Length: 426
Image (cartoon, rainbow, N blue to C red; front, side, top):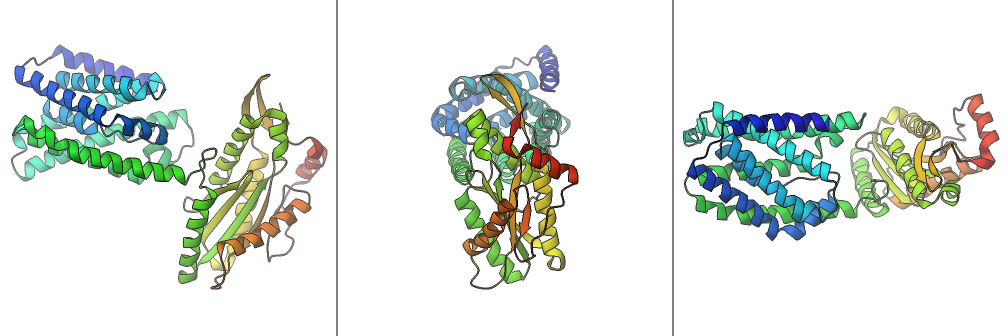
């Protein structure tokens, strides 16, 4: 799919360069915007490299202010030439030193070029920049071009992600709401820059202050997010989970809504590290974290509490069947982990780790004023140890008696046969 996007953009480039506009005014404006993009890159090189490292999975490119302005003001050939110059410079000053794959940069450039072609088409249909001073007509023209640029950009990325990662969620496809907001803010600055440049090219200087402030604000947000995210699993850190859980408990007490907690511990995890190495262990932790996330709701809090232990807080459970819902979620997680097959690379070649299991303890969180995150976790932790003592690969819910797991006879026999060699590799 990457190749399809890039080939389509190459075809559009070829068509645009057949109709090359060589007016002196257009060439000079193209140079002004390209130079502004280069200066912006130089001024913010340190910030950009930090953002690339921190926001590797979800990165908002603030150079859109220059590329979007070029798309709005310049004919297709000069607009694409400006974008290529800016992104070539970005590669050598930001992407390459950060050791990011070249194919990712080529794809990013192709996506921006495709978005620019779409915005240029909207501007052309609207009568060009001459209509921007016509009150509501100009506003609609610029707003529509902004929306189309953002939509094409997001859709191209989403299509590639969807084809390369089946089952990806909406956040994986389109990013977080904060990312979309920042991108929209950057495009609005680009539209304002394009509008002011129709009056005087010197107004390009006024764009640097707001874009640099926005850039540092985004870096701060991304650093804050990284500080609360476990690097191996992508889950909340224990400190971040505790803070969010405390807030959720206050809300549940105020609203008198159902709140529950699960504590999960991966069985025999030390054997994975001892047998296959810590890198393989990290892959297993990431796979288990994905399995836990897949079986809970989007607003449930999932964290890595340390080592191979995970925690889940489930707010808003229906009061009349909260315990049953909690047990059902725990059992789904337990079963999903038993079906995991984790591919890993070892010095002896690739292999697949299977036969994993997880023990789960849970509790309903009471609304009593004295209840804390720690006290609720202690109850769930005791239930977890009951699950461990019963032979592992089990679920126990505190206060609901010894609830046996709903395992099939075949699963029980398999557990007994593989207890001493779990987990195994093939």
